[in-house]
Amino acid sequence: MWSWRNILEMFNPRLFFAGSTLLLLLFLIFEWNTQDKKQKLERSIELQSDFIPTDTINIRNNNLDLYIDLNDGSLRKAYVLEKQERDGLFKTRLMSDDESLRFYFKSSVSGFANNSPFVVENFSDDYLKISADDASGNRLTKTYYFEDKHILFVEDRLDLSTATFGTVPFFKTFYRENKKSIDYGVSFSRDHLAYSTSEDVFNDEQLSSVSKREDYLGHWVGYSQKHFVVAVFNDEEQQKLSLYPVDRNGLYRFGLTEDPVIENGQLVSQTKIYIGPKQKDILEVVAPHFKYNLDLGFVYGVGEWFIVLLNFFYGWVGNWGVAIILLTILFKAVLSPLQIMQINSMVKMRRLQPKLQEIQERHKNDRQKLGMEMMQLYSKEKFNPFAGCFPMIPQIPIFLAMFWVTREAFEFRGESFLWIPDLAESDPFLITPILMGVMMYLSQKMMPKPPQSSQGMQAQIAQQMMVVFPPMITLIFLFMPAGVVIYSVINMALSIIPQVLILGRVEKTSG
Image 1: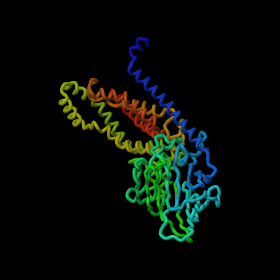
Image 2: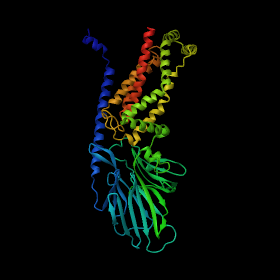
Image 3: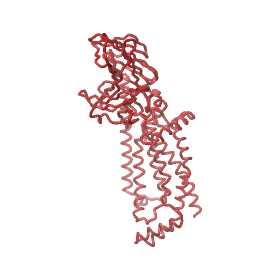
């Protein structure tokens, strides 16, 4: 029978302290994570009904909610409607001009400055036409409408009071301060300036890195954040693309400069602005190389293929969490020969353990001789001690691609699965990261012991890894998108189950 004495003898103060510390840390992270997301959600809901000045006109469609300033004809606020309302949030702010974020767009004509606010000539829910004069009697007419569900079309027509010679450039410019968005769903967002040039199809850099004016030829330039991108583009011809350093108002400028065409004596310029999600099928048809705004890191090709497969599975089952599980099963089936190689290596390693222990005892004071004898044994038994590591190699790009896809692709934003409300955000209840740590521990427990005595360096390192690595994995996965953690948990489960079955059978046979 168990007694208090037996329990006290088994008690390990170090393990108790480590376990208590880990539990406390998990609790603090849970509290911080919950409060942080709650505050961002509340702030985003407040911004939905933010104060709109009386001299601003609102136009909208089923995807965008935009606000035009009549003082200068600029696009001052832009919201993207969410796929579905959740907890009161039905749209996300991408552009604004207030204390929380200054980011707006303006198309303008060189030398034109209206001497009074623009006057509304025609207006409906999704259409706006305004005009204004300058001190010389020149008239600028601006027309706004939606060319597509995420594309705003702006036409500028300049009527000159007197004839002019040469070209009058039109500027299509973003103004933005170097500040990250504070809205919901931007955890660990990699906000950055993005543009395409004739020399490089995709460039991304921080606004603060623009220290002097830079000019290029390109199709588009804009600003990218998690799930969304805002950009001005010309899908037909490359135009002059300019980046400007911060001005005295704390704003960076970036945009296109285009020469107008002449129609009936008017100077006409047309502008297209994309305001929308990072969704593969949408980005591909906007402009050349625009698809690279879906930031998938250096594994872009792999991630792009994953999105196609995930969309296929989603079309079949109608749930993104289930689609991730099906994709994981597919990967496991394709890579099963490598896992069989890994399991065979583990089986052979276990069978060689008695011989390795014998060699180790015989040459425990001669490390050089010990190494030679082990290599001879491996050669004789045709055993490669590194064969068990080969199956891990293809897992690395797969994991990285899944991480980028579930973090960046708009498809996962706000999509729920079981207890997880948003697959693009971390698991709010910490269940999947903890489960991943437990399974990592079980997987390491099943690995063959190193061919040295319990006092050897390898054994000590292996023991330390069993204690340190699973909690470390758990802590890292706490902050990752739930989608990639689900992939990792299912992948680990599909690795452990056949190992348990096969190794258990081997032990019974050898026993």
